Image 1 (cartoon, helix red, strand yellow):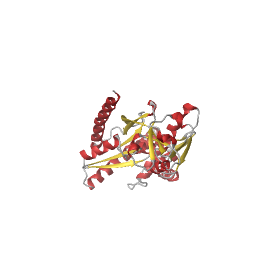
Image 2 (tube, helix red, strand yellow; image 1 turned 90 degrees about the vertical axis):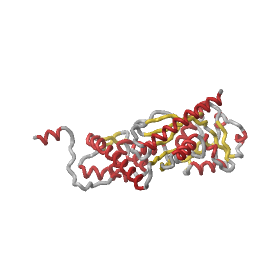
Image 3 (cartoon, one colour; image 1 turned 180 degrees about the horizontal axis):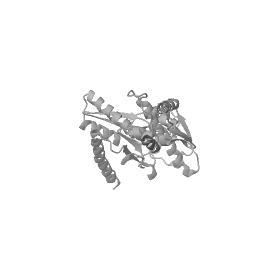
Image 4 (cartoon, one colour; image 1 turned 180 degrees about the vertical axis):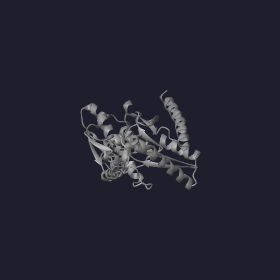
Length: 325
């Protein structure tokens, strides 16, 4: 009778042997599918095929003997048993990841590590200065820079696979802390032969009939949306071609006259033959950049990095104010 009362309080999971019959990856698939409510989006965030994620989830369901997800119009959602399972395994996964990172640092004889996700060029500007100064102040810390998209970096932050990331914008992000650090003016990239390349600055009204290029990789989607948003005032949907290449290749395509694009001011430090950058003139084309990290991240290297970022941001803000006076 006592066992029956316990069963009535919620679904119970059958006992398993001391040898766990599934790996950590499968557990991560379950948690990611729960977070994204889609096997496809979870697979994209983890760099896997949707079928791989789906099979990994099904393998654990078969072992445990319950279904974790059910179909709904917007994708998938957790069952009651799935909610209990994810709530139980999430802290365990985070603990395993922390243990792996700590053991790896100890094995390499390092005193700390810092993983940084970026969307923009590190050729120059605030972010380059921040990382460069931090490396000089803390040469014992191993610094890893990861390129990637916004969704990919956010998933990595939540799973503690990434310490900090830098994005455009300053909006709140669920389960993350954010701090706006600096601003950059958006520039238009032209070929040196383009008739607008002779202008010192650019107005959006001059770009209504231009052919824009954006990369399929990050930050191409944000660039695409930005162009559409800024040209919407002129009741004209811009011609934007999505290219299957990285940002560096895209900039070279712009330089040889295949189209134009928009970039942050950081790209003004990159030398590409026959590539010309001109600033957009409107205040709306000054975009904020923010640091994003997971709350409660217990990494001394990250705390020192955030402290330095705050000091540099205050200095950068003061210099901008002096330029305006």
